[in-house]
Image 1 (cartoon, rainbow, N blue to C red):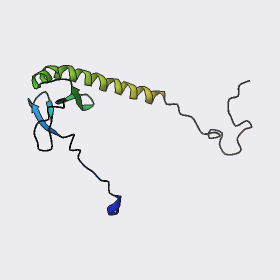
Image 2 (tube, rainbow, N blue to C red):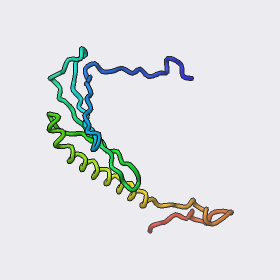
Image 3 (cartoon, rainbow, N blue to C red):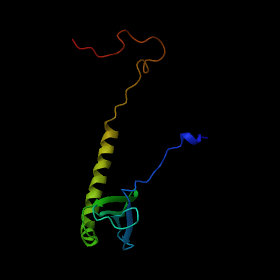
Image 4 (tube, rainbow, N blue to C red):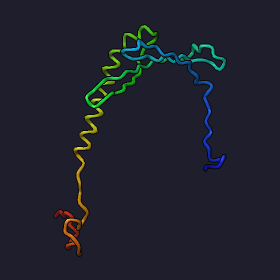
Amino acid sequence: MAAQNDLPEVQIDPKGLYREDVFTDRRAGSIRRLTPVTVDGATDAARPVLFSGQTQLLTPAGVLPLGFEIEAKTLEEALQKFPEGVKAALEQAIDEARELRREAASRIVVPEVGGAMGPGPAPPGGGKIKFP
């Protein structure tokens, strides 16, 4: 068990507070609105309101959750931009999956030196390629 002094000190930044509202149609997804607030809970007009979208798509591999930021000033604007946010997040997820597949396919399996030769001493030169 960790000693009391080893525990991290977690503090909430009083200058970075937001009130969270979630809007959903219970079908296509949801939009989160983060409204900046002061320490007394009043709206902080000096900072921008933030919007993000969330949805899930059914794929042959299962459910794919998508989350994305929405550049908008109002909830109405965020609702209008929701479909393009879904498309961009899906394209990004597909690109990341392709990149992971490429990386997995390009891995080269290199046997250990002398591993394929069986027991005994390694041949002279260590099996390394030498250039003139």
